[in-house]
Image 1 (spheres, helix red, strand yellow):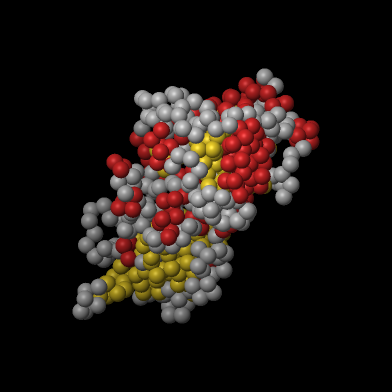
Image 2: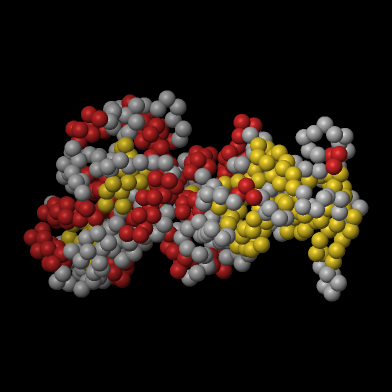
Length: 576
Ligand code: ATP
Ligand code: MG
């Protein structure tokens, strides 16, 4: 990997174009920088995930923001793996992150970087600081370092090792690298100010000794740079102009600037750190560490379980990249932390699929109906529109016959007042078909369970014809019994019962929803779904939006419910 950047070439190729209508405070900052002709008119961002897990919807927000800015300004955005911690990182995660960024529709071209590619240079830059008298090797233990740091109200205490000479420090640092000391026995620290009001400036640790095989550099190193040291240098090396990160790094900004200012880097790049509020989503957790726990302890079926807020989970569930991007745009970019309702994300996919998903009929909990007056063995084909929102998608033919299935809960023997579906002696319309009337209920003699209904159909009431049409209140979906295909349908509910699973210091796992997955193994779906491709999405009439799961085989179709039809977000907005 060649990670030496030719800045002249970059400048030549990429002159940013100022945005006319900045849509958030970050774009205002960038516009101002362009007006002041900073960074030679370049706009260059990066998305810097740590490959220690699969990325989630919060990362998607950061991806949309960073790659989106590059698009809006005709600038560039790098993908950089921030892999400075050998113990938790893995190529599996690197690969999944690349796949997820691509799925969202973004492209880093040839700008794929790894912080670990800079290990040699980072080591040299640390040497620079040592020679300038700005860094020293400290023998205090981690506990002592913490003690010496002081608190928000009390200044810290200087380490007794702080006054070592540059020569001594250089020698010790070299020996640290050579593996002469035990893990944790020494660190390299910046020499800044133990009395600073900002704890991050009280001689922060730059390097630690930590043996462990790194997913790229193997066993070459036993010392690893800290994020606060590696990140600003990686940004500067790549010519990043705007280093966008989440709010918890606000207090680290003076250190970021201190590193950039005190290190002599080729290209003279001066990246600027800008912080925004991270996305918090209701009814879920959003930290790779916690998501990994859910996977490893078997609370979900994997990182891409459709209940997970990971990008791969959303993809498997049936979310489209467009809906995820739409969501990220609607929530905007803010300076204050807040919690976004999951219902908004669901609203976005509903909007997308309302326009784009073909309609089909399926029965999730089947109840058989036999038509007493329909000829044995007869089948007729009826016309069904594919998508009323898009008449140009045309229609298909669906079979009607003597035996059909309807949903169990569309029939009640003793219907309450506002129940307009089927009941003994009542009429309802079958979608795309006829008006039918319930004549008789057949039950299991022992258990009283309803086994099937005997009905009649009225041949004069075929949908779409000019035949005399009576008004009936209910319209039901159905499938022809002998034509329908068996399918398994998986229904998902919130992964956590509480809006904030960690409210009041709760252990998030105590708030897992025991009913987050419901499997319906014996559903009946219309025959047009026979060849439905994995990942294709449909509206099951009256039931919601569904997506074909990769568990589907020749023998068995498997669907995930993406969302139900009930749009709680739209309702909330209306009542405001
Ligand atoms: P996590 O604890 O979930 O792993 P992280 O911040 O440690 O989060 P990184 O891989 O270091 O994860 O993050 C890569 C980028 O994504 C960073 O710039 C980070 O600020 C951003 N990011 C992470 N979580 C969110 C979030 N919830 N909302 C917006 N941006 C986020
Ligand atoms: Mg992190």
